[in-house]
Structure formats: structure tokens, C-alpha cells
Length: 271
Ligand SMILES: C[S@@+](CC[C@H](N)C(=O)[O-])C[C@H]1O[C@@H](n2cnc3c(N)ncnc32)[C@H](O)[C@@H]1O
Image (cartoon, rainbow, N blue to C red):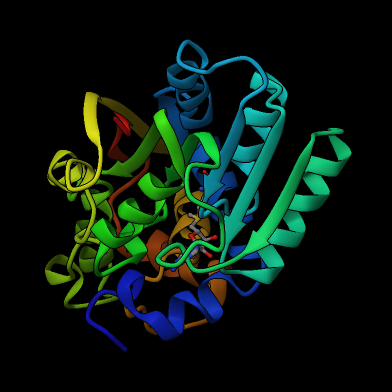
């Protein structure tokens, strides 16, 4: 396994996104804990809304289980939404959600480094929380730029290197992973600090904005639900969220446990 699980090709194209369950549990644990910070899908739609021509074609690259795609489809009502991802299972989940919403949409299984889409096909493209899975995110940005019409807008979204760093200390303090504090950030290839530099390799950046999110985990069970979904640590003993909660309860100071993340958005155009 690579030192960074988010850059481990076998893991990313295998267990990590083989099904929707991990993402669902992670999102639920985070949403339940969130005490401040806007929904990223809402911010993305806000950033695009003012820039779209009538009846636009919109791409959602690395769509996952379609949370952003669904919001774009219902809020912006594009002429066509095309959701792209490498995971067949997540594309099925996305397609089901888009169908249920009656969206004019299609799904495409592809690697974002080689999009099977024509040049200049889209008015807008979103790549949210996915380009940090690439060791060469500029290659994917070049593909996104190729698919945009001149004047088309991309919204690229990622997190800061130190997002959720508080968990490193909690996992270490609980004796679950002695190297927790040395593990590389999951976002090391594409993060708030290099977002501008990577976006400008193929696009003209109009705006970069950062939003702070704060999470408060009420008890050990809630914290364990989240930790069971992150591939960052080598947690032993394995045993799922219930076993993890028992250990956390025993070894950590009293809850609540607080963590922070920074979500960064680049708005960029193809000239
Ligand atoms: C955290 S999920 C994305 C969430 C989604 N964009 C949203 O806003 O709800 C990351 C996604 O990136 C996809 N992915 C990772 N590497 C990829 C690649 N090389 N090509 C296409 N998709 C990829 C994964 O399959 C996964 O669905």
C-alpha cells in the first residue's frame, strides 16, 4: 500500500469506492457532527449559477454517489448533466438518485485523466473532493479544460492539508496507531495550498474561496463511526465502530471531540 491511501491506485479503484456504504457512513457521521460550515454542494451551485448560459451542459467529474450532481441537477436544471466516475457502484447510486429526481442526466464510467467526452462539449464542469486521488491532478484539470467550451467555467473543490488533523492526535492518544501523527495528509496531491497553482496549468482562475467547517463529536460512539470510515490510519485492533468506541471510551479524555476542515473552491474559466 502507498504511504497515502488516497493515492493508492489499487485501493482507490478497489475497496475504497467499491460500494456506497463507506461514503454514506462517513457523510452521516460528519453531518451529524457539523456545527458550522455550509453544504459544499450549495456553494458550488451558487458559484456556477451566475455564470451559466441558458440550457447549459454541466459535467460532474468524480461524482461519487451523486450528492453534488443531484444538487446541481435540481437547483440549476441544466439541459444535460453528465456525471463521471471510475466506480461502477457509485455511478449506479448516482444514476438512481438522478433518475428519481427526474433529471436530464447521464452517467459515464471513466478515469478523469482520460475523459471519453468530445472537446468543448460543456458549459461548466465541477470536480469536487476527487482530484486528490490523482498523483498528477494537473492532467485531470487539462482534460476538464479540454471538455469546456471557450468561456466555460470549472469549479474545483478540495480541502486543506491540515483538515481533520485533530483526529491524528486522538488516534495517537488512544494508542490505536502509533504513527497517526506522521501519516501524510490524505489531500497532499491537491489541497487548498496548491489549488490555484494546479488550476492555472490549464485554466484562468477567477476566484479562490475557503470555507471553515467545524465538527463536534458528542461521544466515543459518534467519533468511532467516523474513524471506522477513514483509510488514513492503520488502526488495530480492527473490529468495526463498536469495538473502536469501547477503546476510545476507555482511553480518551471525556467528550466532546472537535475537529476542523477547510473546504476550498477555485472558480476558473477556459478562455
Ligand atoms: C469523495 S468521492 C467524490 C464526491 C462527489 N464529488 C461529491 O461531491 O459528492 C471521490 C470520487 O472520486 C472517484 N475517483 C477517484 N479516482 C478517480 C479517477 N481516476 N477517475 C474518476 N473518478 C475517480 C472515486 O471513485 C469517488 O467516487
